[in-house]
Image (cartoon, rainbow, N blue to C red; front, top):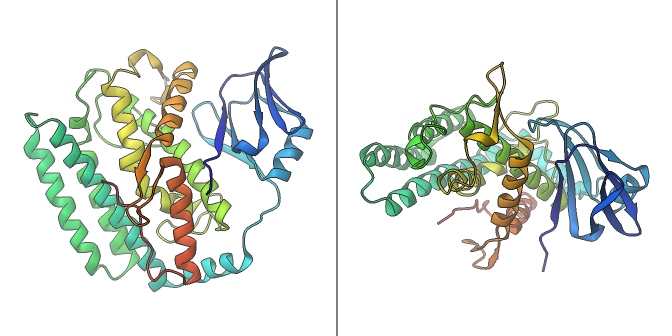
Length: 344
């Protein structure tokens, strides 16, 4: 039975990380803050530029397969250090052949997009169940119906560009009513449209930050099972872009990340004062708020659900790894289709 490995997030500037035996020690101003056994970690993610990691610890992380990633204060990916790749070369060769095969690529991508649209639709249906007397019901129901129509369209889809068009249309319907799902703190958390680089309001800043955390976990899961996170099926390959991680992430955006964003806002765990507004228009989570979001993210990963394909109860954090395994089995030929994650 695989156990969910932790991600160590370093958010405080001037943190000092070193090796002590088979453990990672984090210090602030010579004071030991935390000490964690290396075998419990999957990766270390550092925010900001003033974090020091000793060569001895980097060597230990490389030896144990623990990746170290650096992000800017706003969550922009800067770089990553990792040891020797341990992936199965036969699996990766098969993955590369599939990525070049338009029929096989389309088959996997259709499963992922269908799961994304279904999970977005489930989010909206769930909201209406919990808010039966909510005023904008008609608009939300209209989006639910349009998403159902697009699910049917996927079955008839014959090329990748058409599929990407369906995905984009679905995102338009879903995010077109996303503001209605925010029922508290409306003045501070108004959502008009999805903006990414940079996020231009508080909701988008929160979405982008949690998507960043999710992407790192998905990438780690793919690398663990031996797949190359940079060679995908749905997302176009670009230098430095983890296309396969972005592909697999589509199944988790609405039910995992978006629900977490809505909970943080509607339960008032994140508020107006937790954001910084820059002259450029960019909106960014402040450092202390970042820690609270990371804690909520980690707690969400520990919640248990029943996997719809395997019929087993597992922590959500393990579902990332399970989906990566199922994708690898499909590429190897052990499964006739890829069972994308359908949430309930």
